[in-house]
Image (cartoon, rainbow, N blue to C red; front, side, top):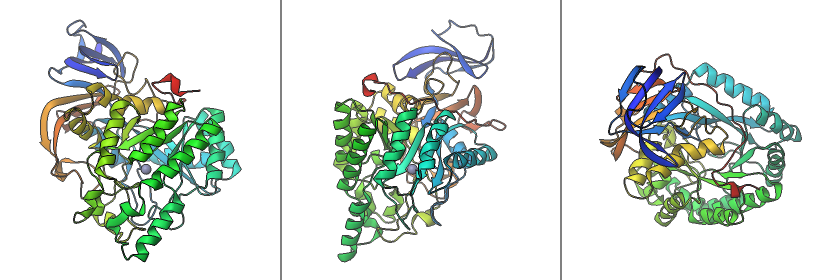
Length: 472
Ligand SMILES: [Zn+2]
């Protein structure tokens, strides 16, 4: 007797695709078997013929309920998680925020309490943002954070002083100290890699030339800005023994830096945002061009082509949204290169854009799509195979995805707390039809049915990688 039986679909995991029925019991996947092989004694039997049955998406980079500046004030997890469910993401990884001499554990407890109050409708894990002049006491707290299920620490090599994203910068010494703690206790350090000194130089040059208009934001943070920081962080990572996850890699030079480290079998990983896969710095020239912006800025078409190549060949690892949803007016409030707000309203579109632009355009296999959107982030952040796979024993986070669907994105069909979308008007192939969280339906036939379902905190174990040779 199953609680739920999905019949006749094609189950897609990162290791392969197969026609199979999926039985769910007690919130877990209890059976995956040849069509017709399982008992049909189930409380609910749903025909998934012609559909893909995918593991729920894992979005490794999301900011909810976070205020960095007046403009940068993110949507709540209640709204954002609903959008996630419609888009096929059943686990998001949000961030706690620690600054200067605040307690790391205190910041994690505060964030978890806030998430619990907001009752997001999908499951969630947590990274810890550690910012500013991190004291030794906070470096010592990293051990407790990791044993408490927060095994990834995020730091910034940019955003100092009154920047467009507030004051998040830590110098290399602080990052070195945190990496040493992470290495000792089995964590992973995530870094926003853009060199602050090089940014200051480019910003001042643009002002000197009278070209400080916000739509020149890509010229304030060109490729060398990213490459310099990535290569430095790789050095600290390799010398400290801490794995490194480079968030939102945007340039071909950044990819090459990571590829060099990987060639030495260093545990260095890279993330791509789905807006980088569709938009380029040429889009800044549009009217309201800064709507398309987030940090690091969009790069050239050649960089975009390199991002696709790296996702296909495995030199980059995950696709995330960096969802930081703010209203259109806030997004357009910055007029000059040093105050353009970042942030992307993307949690709902991530999976579908990756399928449509990747799989349907022949740039990614179906299995690689699932790996990038679900399995790889789950592994790297220590929640695999509970999340990220359709296999016996995993949480029954299941997406019924219609590969034959075609739709045009419009704001009234999206569910974030937002008054614009950079994806508006875009034709997407494929569509999420149903979303299940631990066996309970949130979305059925593209309609919300999830009242009463509440997401849970998923504690992270130690990070792991598909390729064991990446670990020392
Ligand atoms: Zn972010």
